[in-house]
Amino acid sequence: MHHPLAAAAALMLVAGSVRAQQRFPALTPDQMTPAQQEVVGHITSGPRHSLAGPFNAWLRSPDLADRLQRVGEYIRFKSSIPHVLNELAILVTARQWDAEFEWYAHYKIAMQAGLSPAIADAIGAGRRPEGMSADEAMVYDFCTELYAHKTVTDATFSAVKARFGDQGAVDLIGLTGYYTTVSMTLNVAGVPVPDEADAPRLPARK
Image (cartoon, rainbow, N blue to C red; front, side):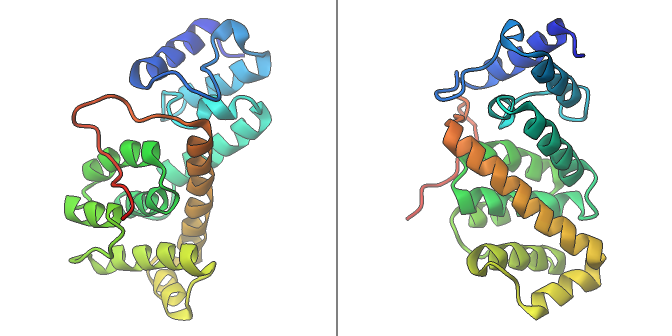
């Protein structure tokens, strides 16, 4: 079972970075069930070290939370898709769902991974980016086709399979599904973007 003091420290990270939740107030350690404390331990002892994002809401269903966070750990940190392309796909998903916190969190990560700001900004504006590499273009096409048409063309599938194999294609599908769930959670929970002067903002749709 996760120690309450560690849970409290993790929750302070959330409180320090975002305002109080509207629909799912942040749980304090003494409000958590043993199952919730155990999930907090799994999350904060992994590569994230934080409960920021959807996790506070997910704790209301601890079994689901634990299963989802394990999927997310694989998708974000262990996927067969290279990190920069993963982040491109996450930004496409954030734009698809108008998930402001998701955009805020992953825009910075995408920049650190080496994604061009011009590509990210075009995605945010709802435009197909210019100047993408072949790998970036095929990931962008795969994700945008999947969202727009509920499937992808044979040509797009074949390109991803030829480059990344069957596993890569499935990992991309898994990414769109997982980050769709994340985005829906963030939107329903009303998780706000922190009040930071330089916080990346998802542009309003025109």
